[in-house]
Length: 236
Image (cartoon, rainbow, N blue to C red; front, side, top):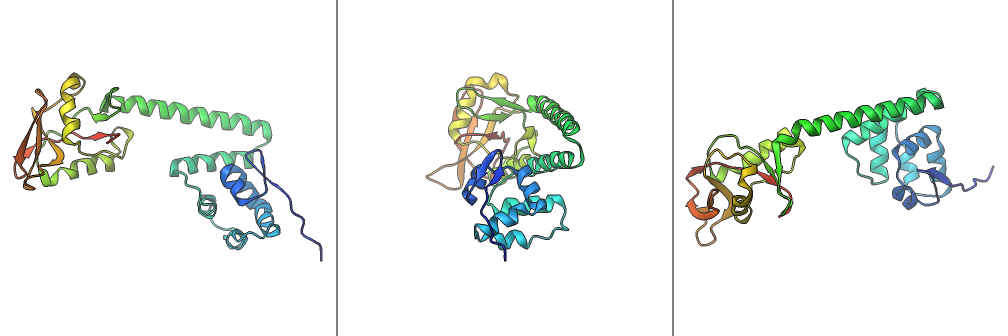
């Protein structure tokens, strides 16, 4: 029986001796290639890593996307869905073209994606306003509707579901954040003077803080009243 010889696995240009090396230099393109060639499985086996059995059990008939997701899970690497799909697209180009064609095709794909990303960013730019002093990003407009305090969270939830402005981490601002809007209100469009904050009135939970935008003043108001809501994202 032939003796299994240890060898280094080349990932992102680095010679990997340990699983930690793969995680540190994680490159999905390289991992997909090593998986399909059987080199990854062999490398794990000769080094007696527990990941060997898991990689070995991955069904080769799965789609490339499913295999890629499993490799990310096995090596505990987080990757956004869009990035994963981009990597798969490039991998398929590399796999199905000669070296020179691959290089040109990949450059073309990357240029297309960058131009699309830039255009999307420009298209969404008018939807947000960034305060350079605080780093907060505000929605430039509200939906023109009034809400009771108990329902204000639904406004941020809807913006997140819509990926408003290209973001999904919108929230209702607290009292202090809304008070500060007075100093740069010219960069935002307000449907009214008064807006709910997310801050409750400590002395009485049936009240919450409402801010008069054009004066920067705050008042505690019964939560049963209806006011407008303007969402924000960023530091707290």
